[in-house]
Amino acid sequence: MENKIENSGFLLINKPKDWTSFDVVAKLRGITRIKKIGHAGTLDPMATGLLIVAIGREATKQIDTFKAKEKVYEAEIEFGKTSNTYDAEGEVETRRVILSLACAELAEASKDKVEITLKDFVGQIEQMPPAFSAKKINGVPAYKLARQGKPVELKSATVEIKNIEIIDYTWPKLKLEITCGPGTYIRSIAHDLGQKLETGAILTALKRTKIGEYELKNAKEITDLTLDNWSDFVLNT
Image 1 (cartoon, one colour):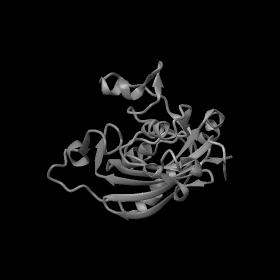
Image 2 (cartoon, rainbow, N blue to C red):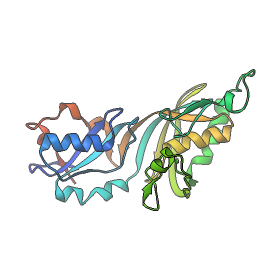
Image 3 (cartoon, rainbow, N blue to C red):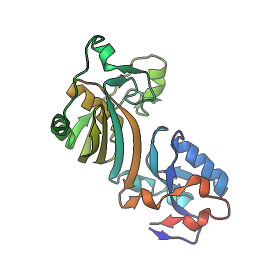
């Protein structure tokens, strides 16, 4: 991307924790006074990191180009717990309770065992989205049905995990760098890893560091943008 003089193009934003991706869009509409704004790739409220935001009609037409790009995440996972949302935002239960191990210690998973198990996730895999997700069932987002206690019947999807590296591991906490294709749910990786290891696991933190060639280190804090300066940071393809 190159800097663009016209007020149409793309902004690289570091999405704050507890903001929805739409919160970022709404804030930028207020700052820029431009209504035609969209984002390329939703981040859950608990997640932080790179969000590419399209400003103006011509830029929003190119959003799908960015959605198709490879993404890199830093994910923090905690073993010994499960959640209905697959992350720390849902109803969390300890694995000890689920397995009726009230009087026993949950066995640790060795780093070697974690590394070997993670290899099962690399490549093209079938992944089941979380029930609490934006996937639609007969036009209704799955999370709305799940919140109402209604049955959620989702279909698995083929996704591509290009690489998984362990950044740090001290039981029960694991930090990973995950490189993946579009449509991947990192929450599902955390949940499925816990299932395979028979320990349970939830996602406790998530940061997107890269989308294609665009990196988080070049992103702006939304709190630093004003009506007078935002256009200085607009980029075009």
